[in-house]
Length: 235
Ligand code: URA
Image 1 (cartoon, rainbow, N blue to C red):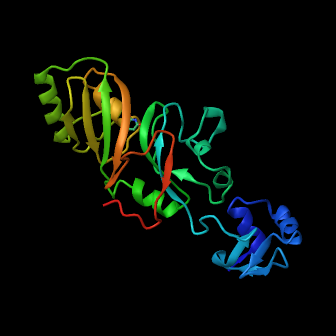
Image 2: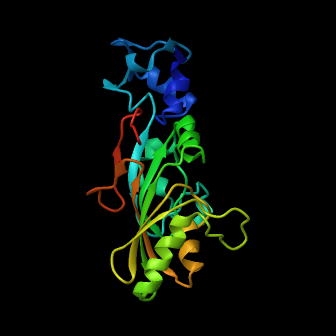
Image 3: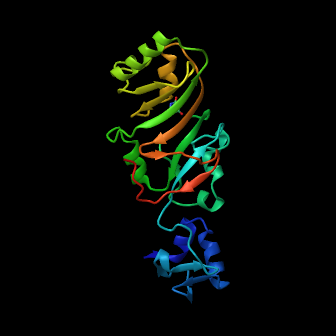
């Protein structure tokens, strides 16, 4: 049971002060009966605002196809944020909606957003080793011998990135063309995919994430999102 004004404010409906106004204006009901006080205790599922049930009161988990140029940071000084693509009310929720790991500003594709901090910890923990699949486009053609050598090196678990002391975990590289490849990694180091190709003398000119664990982006258009069940499986 939670205080009514706190519940409405945490779900991004209004401030706690505004909640009192909404109650006085008879906009809020509990179990179909007009709410009386802001400090009334209630269950999320019993509350309606203008006769509508509350918006995802148990939490949010969504898959977003991140467009170019958006950042996963919450800092408004860093430019357009992935959170700006969500309904405004969700942007006012507490706990806040945050990304599960990050994609670079110049990377597109699958990113999970949630207000479930336990899920963020679980899915980003090195212990969990969730496979993430990226499609990378390179700045120049890689010849066949080099392509094969790169497959072996990336799979070896011996690739040491500059400035690091631990080699990358084994990664699976599949070439799609002479300049495009699909790379599956089970960790998430800073700029990892770009740095793996940079270590071999290639610049990634486009990077797109297509899969996170068992979850695929599918037909979701760039810049759009879809709600997932809170108990979504990723294995
Ligand atoms: N690796 C990168 O280099 N960038 C990303 O955004 C994700 C993985």
